[in-house]
Amino acid sequence: MEKKGWDGFEIGAMLRTFDGAVQDIATTLPENRPYSQSSSFTASVADWRIEKPLFNKDYCIDCQFCWIYCPDMSIISRDKKMVGIDFDHCKGCGICVQVCPTNPKSLLMFPEQKDEEAALAEWPKKEKKDQSEEPKED
Amino acid sequence: MSEIKKIKNLKDFSTSADRFEGANLLCPGCAHSIIVREVLNATNDDLILAASTGCLEVCTAVYPYTSWDASWIHIGFENGSSAVAGAEAMYKALKTKGRLKQPDRTPKFVAFGGDGATYDIGFQWISGCFERGHNMMYVCLDNEVYANTGGQRSSSTPIGASATTTPAGRISYGEKRNKKDMMAIMAAHGAPYVAQVAPNKWKDMVAKIQKGFAAEGPVYINAMSACTTEWKFAPEDTISISDLATDSLVFPLYEIIDGTQLNITYRPKNIIPVRDYLGAQGRFKHLFTKQNEYLIDEWQTRIDAKWEYLQRREEASV
Image (tube, rainbow over all chains, first blue to last red; front, side, top):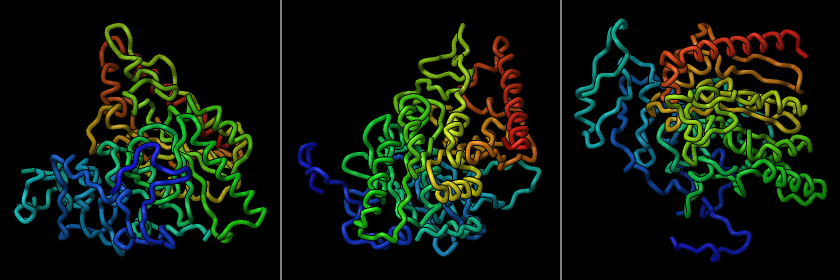
């Protein structure tokens, strides 16, 4: 994107988040939006993470707690189903893992370089209720 | 347009398309963006937004990026409220003159400000907007500290909290003044709707935001925003700290309609001691020493008295 100095903008100019016309933003899903390069959606904060959340579909009950409490719009939900995680914008805070109500949790934090398939293979089994609710990490 | 968006449950709500984008520079685990998402997703109408200087503003408009998919303006620390009030006045004027290009659309006017911009610096401007009766909503993201500039105390900082300008040490126990009751002040303006919300109680919050959008006139929303950096807790605990705050009644959730009718909207099943809330945060760590322990009892007494007061107000409805 061409960078303009403070005096390069015309009066009334603004940073446009969309290149093309969008009739109704509120009902347009992100994949259908023509983002311009000045939308932070095109940027990434993936390098902020030390740990990343991984999603195990087998245990998910689509309660959407992770979606509502994600501060970074990184939980992708489509048609009332949890689909996956947006790793470009996830900062690895771990709120989604904390609020996940399933047993075992369907979201767990793993080190950033962990392979997803290996993580799914060693997913913890169901815990008894009297035990601590803290997720076991490798 | 203009009809209230139907949100029956969280699955319904999750079909919303966010108008607030990722890769903003808010801290991991920041409650600000949880609140902003819940406010923005509560309606499908067009939005005209303003932000006062603060964490939310500096982190979502970093040159050359913007994180907002709606009209958004920032002017100064104090005038997020009057910026949006000006836009609202212009909208009204153009509507009266019949010069709106899409007169059937019903935009919503929302200003965001931190507690510094609301309780201290922008107070006069907000008061002016409420007195003039603009049809707008002001959302205070109340994290009880100037988090953007390094954690100075604001008039929202509660007693006993350690902030960089009121540090706890051998002699001082931190902030000496009690938190300002902004809810009562805004209700005293005769605003049609004033409410306190918390992001962890999303349903309560969305219902209140929708009520606020439906109300004619200025609406004040005080949103508790747990600050992982300045309250000093781990980023993943944002929601559990918020739960502690609402369940210990440190942040009671209630609304005041037309400045008189007070309704308590959330009554915790098990009220937990304030000690649990204080103990979970690093900013109150020094209260758990022999010389400062009396402050915890004072906290509990004050919170109990406030809860009692709210209940009596609700019954009396005056």
